[in-house]
Length: 182
Image 1 (cartoon, rainbow, N blue to C red):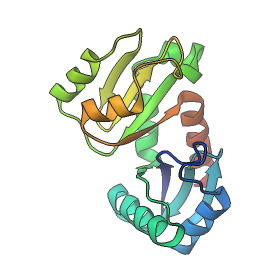
Image 2 (cartoon, rainbow, N blue to C red; image 1 turned 90 degrees about the vertical axis):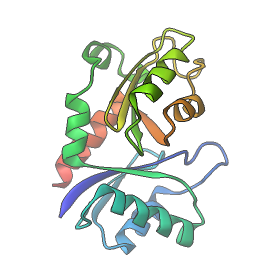
Image 3 (cartoon, rainbow, N blue to C red; image 1 turned 90 degrees about the horizontal axis):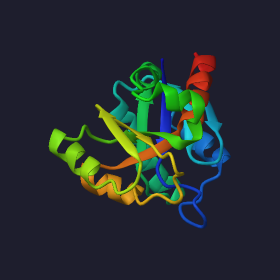
């Protein structure tokens, strides 16, 4: 079985898309996934499965969540090996070490084109810095995420794909949890 990291997009934000982590664990266990563990309350899950691709796992979880929990949201899945690559490819090691809560790794559904990446970079009005590597956008928010005009909606619109971000602290915690699951 392969170890995977799953990220549910936009759950448990106020009254929007509420899901308990025990419900999420039960859902994945019911789908035949093993060693299911969640992290925090924001839809982070580590599990083992014999699915062949991350897109297969995404579809399986999205459909089951909609049918069984009435939760319609995007699910982004990466193998533990891919997650290690996200960490290794981080173009902002200084920020990761000095201010990890203001560095986001945004898992994307699709690889954006160069022109889409340039459109996103051109839309930045603050001091944010963006670098995209494959299906991951790395974003530094030196003045904080909450005040930034570089929102999830703007990122998704410019890149023409869905995604969900986790701060660098969470990225590292998920990696450690995946290592412990193997």
